Amino acid sequence: MDCLYVPKLSCNLNSLLALFEKNITVHRVEDKFTLESNSKTILKEKILKKLMHIKYMLLTTLITTKDQALWHRRLGHPGTLVLKRMGLPYEITTCSVCEINKSHKQPFNHQFDSAAQPLDCIHLDLIGPVVPASISGCQYILTIVDQATSFKISKFLKKKSEAFNKFCIINTFMENQQDRKVKRILSDRGGEFMNKNFRELAEKYGFMHIFSPPKTPQHNGYAERANSTILEKARCLLNSSNLPNPYWAKAVNTATLLSNLVQKYILSHSANLRCENHCHQTCDF
View 1 (cartoon, rainbow, N blue to C red):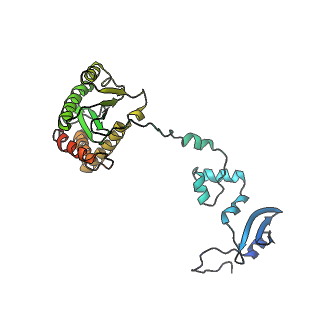
View 2 (cartoon, helix red, strand yellow):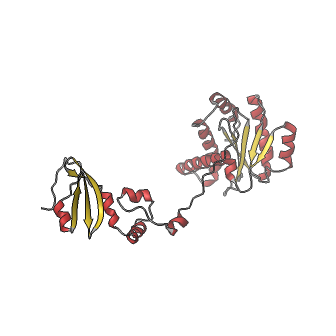
View 3 (spheres, rainbow, N blue to C red):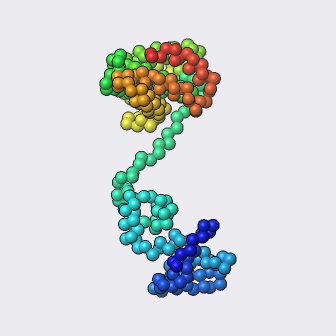
């Protein structure tokens, strides 16, 4: 008989005779023992309660460096933690395949200046052109995000040049409803934002217009995350409704509303509710 089946046994037992058959010798010194194969020590452990306790993962030291790399390739280039949990050697040399195919951007630790109240800082971004155009002929989405409340507004444009007029309408409405003035707006350096109209508007009403550096969407993170959230929801809504793609604007509008309703990270809850109650009455459904 090679093994015994003991249902209530909480650990595996190894036979000394089985070790002897593999030409493995056992040496004991006080409360410790060693296992040797071909005069080489392959294991050192302690004797506890008259039993020799073996951490089975240490037996894998018999595998050569060549075998380690082979198993790493066979298993689809897993990380060292996966190899360790599988009981395989995990101190492998650098893998060039992993370096090329598993490279990631370093986390971006940029922090925005705080915005304690609604309209302290407004983030803008433009998505498009979206193909096909919406049923009303729009191809662009103007996203506006209030940093303090994470409240989002989506407006649809037929041309990029409409961004300024749309922002003016929304800005006037929000300032009247909140009885506050916009202090800062943050956008990328797209021509729809970095132009004479926005510059003169900032000078006239005394707010700062901050531009993110070129090719760094991370600096406009609030708007970028809002775009991602809204578009993901919109795709789900559009696909589940089985409507044709030109109805994407309806889906985006609904996704924006739902995103505001389920917003989890709100610093000023009461102010956000006021903004919801007023701003969404003007959305183009």
